[in-house]
Amino acid sequence: MKKLAIALIIITIILAASGIYYLSNLEKEVFRISTTTSLEDTGLLEELEAQFEKKKYPNIDVQIVSGGTGVALERGKRGDADLLIVHDKKREEAFIDEGYGTKRYPFAYNYFYIIGPKDDPANINGSTTATEVFHRIFTAAQTKPKVKFVSRGDNSGTNSREIKIWNKTYNDIKKSPWYIETGSGMADTLRVANEKQAYTIADSGTYLAYQNRINLVPYLTNGSDLLNVYSAIPINPEKVNGANYDAAMKFVDFLLSKEGQDIIAKYGKDKYGNSLFTAFFGKSEPEA
Amino acid sequence: MNEILQGILKALELIITLNPEVIDITSRTVMISLSSTLLASLIAVPVGALIHFKQFKGKRAIIDIIQTLYSIPTVLVGLLVFLLISKSGPLGSLNLLFTPWGMILAQAILISPLITGFTITALKGVGDEIVDLARSLGATEYQALSTLVSEAKYGIMGAIILGFGRAISEVGIAIMIGGNIRGYTRVITSAMSLETSKGNLELSIALGIILLAVSLIINTLLNYFQEK
Image 1 (cartoon, rainbow over the protein chains, first blue to last red):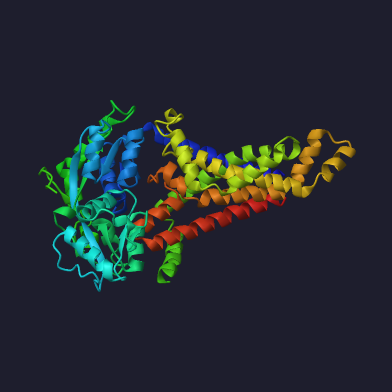
Image 2 (image 1 turned 60 degrees about the vertical axis):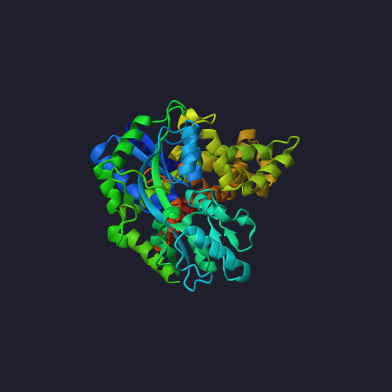
């Protein structure tokens, strides 16, 4: 029993030390961003956070939590985040109309990619719009069992864009046997699409991070219906108690500053050869 | 296959070079799961003992419920605790969401039924003859009970180790309650989930191997202390 007592004392000391360590973190002002997964997975937000904390406001502790756009909006409503970074214009506008967010600040964009198997069984190569691609997939799937489409099915920004494109021509897409919903993040969905040799739609960041591990190829990588705008929305402190509006605006100002936009415009060049995002540099948002 | 091999090599590399980020994540993982195990044990072992010793109506039902809770999904615990400690929840003012404290609380809730149930089983396994024997030798009630608990200590230790294993390996709570915040609530399992999303499969496997290595060290230590 003596040794057990010693063990307990050791554990208690370790825990007390770690407690003091965590408490020492509390001196800083905590500011929480709930971001869409693609910005965290590409590492862009981590880079912005580091520059913001290091150069601008060393007394602000930026904490980043990630999740799909749906989760981020929910966290914002509940007061569990001070700033949202999301990519679903329609739902963002509804969120602001309901009074939860103050304003939408678009700060970067890129394009969703439509990718699929190399042999292209639905013959989408050469299509110029996403609507046309989806139409060809739909038509081919009626006769060719090889043609499949994998959807995130998770209420994320990417998922809601995909549904929006489908709904232009087809409404009951979810009932189709060749339409597979993963209910998971982008990386998991890419893996499923790869295993099933199916078509899917992906944010370019995650696709580029995964391109060497899968043998699907991109077929359509731009066009207005694939435009993917990321924007920041500070939570309205008048509606949501305790939201740190002050820090949120400091971060938004940093995002939109020349310095912040430079980081965004260059991000990914050394790793992928191309930058992953296009910065606005004060220009207005392109029309979708 | 190649990725698995690369993962093992990467794990060795990260350990040998004492990669600061990995050390940070690993020490946080150990601290959080040890804390939650300690917290859960302090409550669950006495509760288990109490349930074992007391005869009362509905005892069987309570044990059934406890055993059912062994299979409570981590996501369910995560959701319930989230609703409890979210800013608009009843405990929102404590600011526990997305902190290590919130994770400790949720993990403790997750593993308490496990430790309670296995404590009861361990005490049952020893049998009440020891208590009778101790009493007949003139032991007080307290002494008799502590004799029983001491006889059952291997079983109880096993219950605690099991609880620790579930706490350190779960990912649902780590992400829902911790939020996987770099440098603050990121633990090995949530880091693995993130690195997998980033496409860094080797790093993810390496982190998994490190988790198992840590678990091996802790279990060895606990077993060493147990054998006096």
